[in-house]
Length: 312
Image (cartoon, rainbow, N blue to C red; front, side, top):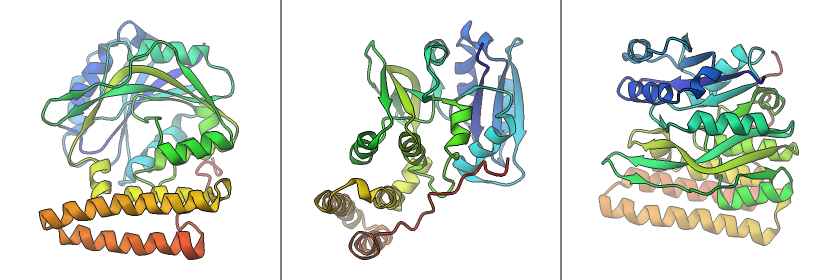
């Protein structure tokens, strides 16, 4: 039987972690296929640890708190915990500390894991978006799963259309995660896409379950929201395009450049209307940066070749 565990990465999540852990415990009886749940805490300074301990009441599945002695960021925190358990488990399931698992999350994901072949590096599902005002934006609901085989087309399509792979709620095969070098710790926004592209570039595959198995909580203070305000999303996406630029024609690269600048233009309008001139200045700087890497250097400024597991 494949050994599975759950990782809940946390950082100052005292306000949401209780709901998250309760939602996992409501995944009975599938939870009993999981021997323990890891709280990978990234040096929280609030009551995250205490709330986590008090919220976990299940007697058959243990909870283990694994603290970091410094704040490493989301990608570094996950790399840290995975390094420490990679020899004890075959698959991990990840759920962020502000997201919720639906009652069928573990059942569906564990079935997909058990049915997977040796080339499947990860399994991901659709999800509902849970907005701060209480609205729920439904995701996809279909019957049949899809497996995307890693090749040049998969890389091109992911860079063009964005990644459908969502880290919160996903499952990852640890041997293949290690083989592909782990998460890029320089990429708080597009680190998920960067890893998926490495998977595809290695000829490995991803399975997508088109069912909403989790609730993704969209918070104004989230990494995604803050990165969007600083154009970190465009910076990281553009670096990935340049890194894989040999897969695209000159015309396609120009289209990427125009697409990124159109995104910036739309943000500039909102910045002017709201009087956010700091963001406007950051936008101008990003336009100059895009011109440099697309028009002159053709070289990414993010390092993409480091394997975070080489020394372990």
